[in-house]
Image: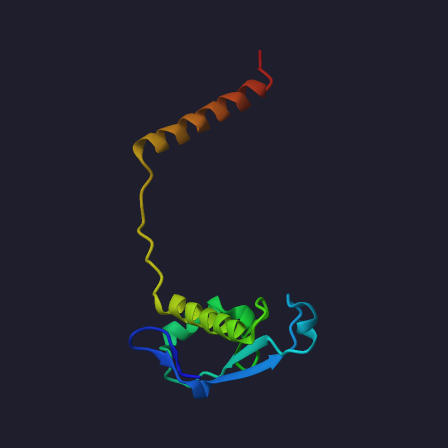
Length: 139
């Protein structure tokens, strides 16, 4: 297999990817009992593959795929053929890395509109009047 292209400038070398195959529990009839169609991809990241910021975002996004040693383990057994499951694993890793390469958008602070402030104050006043009307009058 070739390296895994992520973007035009970034690709994961094949040496960092380890594949293993097992019998699938998915569709396939009797064939599922004799063919190793489930694919498991292990990405053993070498330092420098991703920037520190991107690696931090990746770890947050891919928390469920991480082992305690820092390896990424992705499995696929949704297809009947091993090649399709391999491609599904590659695509999942590619999409997770692409997601982590984009820095999050900064939130632009906004102020409430004049009308919404007025509605809030009107509701507050009504609630206050309602509670005052429940109080016993002192005659």
